[in-house]
Image (cartoon, rainbow, N blue to C red; front, side, top):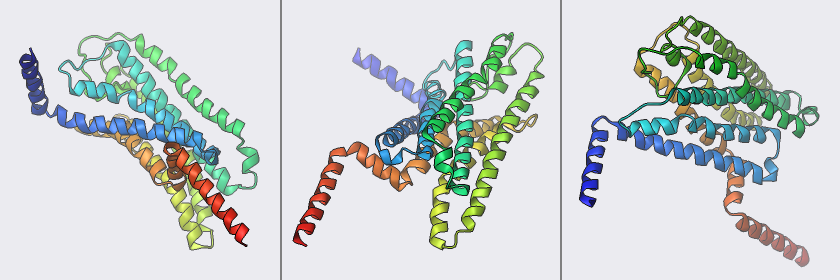
Length: 324
């Protein structure tokens, strides 16, 4: 029996290597694990370290939490398709994947816009910032971003679920998306243009708000007299700009093209950018390039060492004081 199972496993592996599925499965699996673990570490590090209990890090921790679910909405099914001969999904599963993926994406868009406004107030009106951006308002904005992001798509998904689907049942994409699914409907597909307009208006509005906020922030930073101060400020906001450009750059290529059609390979590459690569780089940009986060992560994994180190420092200061 063991020989039979071994020969079957070898045949499956050979088939997967022949069509290149296994070569894609391994890196995507590693990326998925890295995204989930990296964002979880960041989320809990912010919650544990009281020094990071401020609006900026709270918003980023909520963003990291959303990134975990945003990733798991598509990548696990994509991985199962890579190692399975039957690459199918039920209609209900397809609608649910569309709903959760785009709802989480909308929540992240709103949260990124909120973070840009938060940074604008912190830089351009620092004296009033503590009274404006209270912990209560921060919690309300975070919850509002998630609630609105999930509610706004309910009518759209409900309408798509009522459409008649017949004929071809293949979509050339790595996950269920609005345009590929709507093209399978046996009815007038002119609603695709309306869908594109709705998505375009939401994306353009968010991009304009974020761009105006960061342009104002950059002009304020350029007025800082010291070179060291300007470099420190730019390094702080470079992470925000990097995430903003990566996320909205790929999303704009996907949803701001209207009737322009790309080759299937380019469509897949763009989808991979905002579904896989953007979530992969976010923990690196936000977490591992930030000194405060590095300290918080060390405290999360080695809390006793931190306490011992602090007690040793306190003992040393006491001994010096007694000698003096």
